[in-house]
Image 1 (cartoon, rainbow, N blue to C red):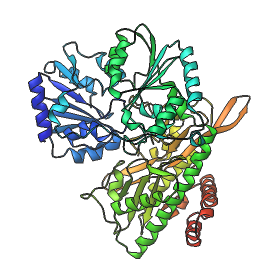
Image 2 (image 1 turned 180 degrees about the vertical axis):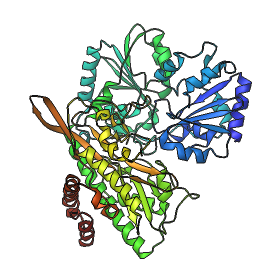
Image 3 (image 1 turned 135 degrees about the vertical axis):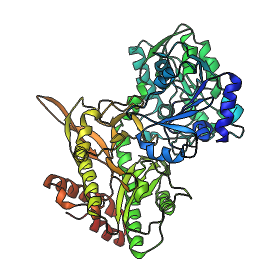
Image 4 (image 1 turned 90 degrees about the vertical axis):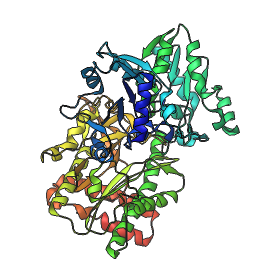
Length: 593
């Protein structure tokens, strides 16, 4: 690749032996704006997670199991070697650097793009012969036509939707600062700041946030942001809350003026450049952002709004299902891109719709085996034969964010396909209906989803579920379901009432098909006894699960009962908003089995 070769030449010119390019912005965001997609620019890999290590004469890309198939295809005609995270005999980046320490003596990266935590962990045990150099200019030297920094206007999310005002949230944060004896708090993660201010924007596609930094003391709150993003209404709103406004990039000079303070910061979110400036003259209190848990536990108003959003979304998904099933039978020419556009148009018709919550995954047959497949003009599959169509999609509404996956059977499918579909359904049900003790994490419960799949010596190379934000990131820490701890994933928090987590087991067979069924689960109280407090889940996703794909003989009586009760709830929630033709379709796919 010409882009990569130009970068390698620049490494030679700068006397760097290696350069790290993560998938990140200055705030540790999961999804990033085009300006920050340097890893994609130099590698051609389009997945949302990956780290590129560029040497003067070679390059290596680390990514996780969600993207193994995709990365192999996208790196096929490059000189970049794929490093599969977590696989046997695949070294971590640090292990790779240490094993090549005789040739790698200078390692460079942009300190604004890597968290303090990642750099500190990298430094621990790194061979002393390898010296770290911060360089934020080298990418711009090579990427001449780089996109501009993202820009979008802020808008206010009224308390009617958010449930709490800025003042209430700040009061809680100040109390936590006092408990930790912190005199200042540097908040850099974008979703947390959008939540704090009850403001949204569109700086990152499909994630309604804005680039900014916040510094909080007992006396003042300072927001660092491109001031052109703030109109008169938002300016008055922030002024009423006594929020001071400073230019976005001024944060780097500002932190150098802070002296002799105890500064609270989250090292997994604050970038290394900021961290390095702060520790020169201050004590740091390294802890998880207190906003993380406050944001994850939804208040009563948010919960009621989110359920309303799911009714809207369930109507869209059900209408999509009706269109897909009926048009397929008619022989209408369907394809992945047109179907993605169709469900988007359905969502656009719903009042309060803001945007889709991520790029829709619409994958037919073998494309479904790539967990994060994205159809384009080259790969766009025509739906002209029997098989599975997997569609993973969601929406941002003023009432909240949704994420739902359904896999639909089209035409006559094999006995094996029905078996695998039913195993995934059993897995989803098993997790959804559990009652568990307060104090459990998703790691305690994940086996409930995987046990039926593991019995077949199968697995899926991702977590079973993730937290979901309120008109924020569709992937929200710190709650999730996963059978083992993954260092780069903060999803092992104790489950608490008010948390919303997806339940999305799957089976993915390369070059054959993928199956995923996904609902969202609200954690609620189940009751108490002499043994303690117990919790359970309420399913808040409302759309039919395709009964055409089920092998009923593989479901036990409890599983059938759960499915029948779920489908009754779906019918009761959606039918009041449907016409007669839609109701007839809904009846057919929510009938008792």
